[in-house]
Image (cartoon, rainbow, N blue to C red; front, side, top):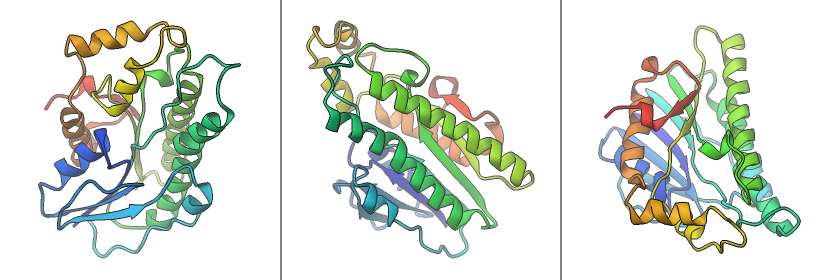
Length: 242
């Protein structure tokens, strides 16, 4: 069997990826989020708020019997309210780093502790963003947290190559592009006073330039089942053909 742990399965890319994987009866998906939106015989759900660090710290991965693939997808993210620094809400800043950095770090650490010694394919995929490498006004929290997650991915990949050169856990930082998710709707509803680029994102929507989450999910699945073809830690879905 193949086992998948995906954060943020209530909507967007996480939900789409879970549904894509569940088309194969050999895949068992565990969703990690605050709400349940998927019903399937092979779907399990863990209600967990990634802003609640104490609860996340208590989360443990269970023992798996004869797995062929074990995969963690850190998809869940908090997109802070678009405001210039000096006007940002302190609680929102804390939530941003809790959800986008601290919780994924804890979950990755627990995943490696549980499954490093397993004799099967083990994969970690962190969903990144163009904001990880580009400074965007009013997105200070999101840009910096995604940049931190990208660097975490690179460091873990380095550690795996040094410590387990013949059998590393594969880790990828996958940038999905501009995807039609609830976060995009929130961006479009931002006032120009707080985000001068809002018109560009409204145009993306009006011109139907947003990518369907299902297409992104299918490309992520291609990475998972063809890791030998993906050597670099950083991947953009635009470079993947399906």
